[in-house]
Length: 290
Ligand SMILES: *[C@@H]1O[C@H](CO)[C@@H](O)[C@H](O)[C@H]1NC(C)=O
Ligand SMILES: *[C@@H]1O[C@H](CO)[C@@H](O)[C@H](O)[C@H]1NC(C)=O
Image 1 (spheres, rainbow, N blue to C red):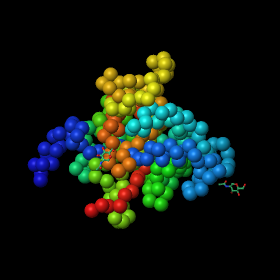
Image 2 (cartoon, helix red, strand yellow; image 1 turned 30 degrees about the horizontal axis):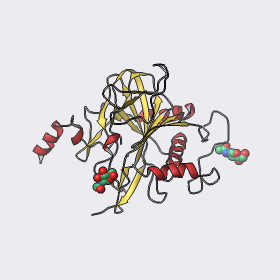
Image 3 (cartoon, rainbow, N blue to C red; image 1 turned 90 degrees about the vertical axis):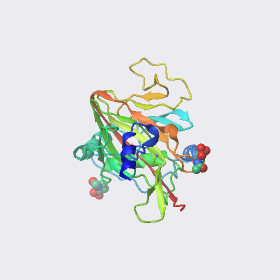
Image 4 (spheres, protein in one colour; image 1 turned 60 degrees about the horizontal axis):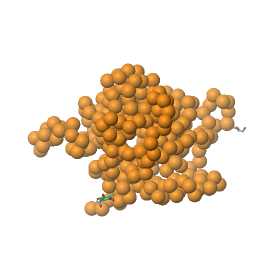
């Protein structure tokens, strides 16, 4: 047994043997698109919990609809680039809420959460009671349209991740090879159906998010090098520049619940400065089959 796990450890560089739970989550593309497209502004909040409200001065957070813009990157797997997903105020509040909670990031290896040179960043679980966290989670839930079952599924525990010079997160996927048993003891398991990866602080060099197997539905925008949000990577796929407030959304699981290996991605090394991002991993539950 010990021998087996040592051998396993020795091959962590191999993409196929590592199962990383910390960063990854697929679903019903059509349902998602239809759900989003057909909902009227009148009934979108019908089955949703009320948004936290604040009615005082402008310095207080207001949980308002943020007028974000989406750009379709890939249909299969579904990848969407979201501009201005979080407001500056939300970013400030979220970073502040996580600031004293950073710990070395861990990866899920053979079912154990361990530190590993494969992932050298810092992570912080965010307090659910922070209003800005609630606002962005609620916005993300609405973005998902009908992907989540309101009676079964949940948005999960959001996490901050920070990279400083020299830190990176090698290729991994956010979905779990073995779905996580429900924490409430019910005979269900969940997996991360989709991922939102939103940049909060971008004062860094490097630090692109690279998806080696994603092909763009349309050519990259003809902007100058500096203004470009993503590019074709020399080793294949696409690399997204970290830009505060912007996020990448993608679907991790096929409709049958199997993880989509094409969603593998890496946080390329930060070569100076600091990058902070937020992971949102919506949980889709399924009854245990065995
Ligand atoms: C919001 O406004 C109402 C009515 O003006 C007031 O009664 C309430 O105390 C206010 N709430 C907060 C949190 O300021
Ligand atoms: C689930 O669906 C995917 C995509 O259609 C397919 O490649 C995979 O083999 C399926 N997995 C199972 C266990 O049926």
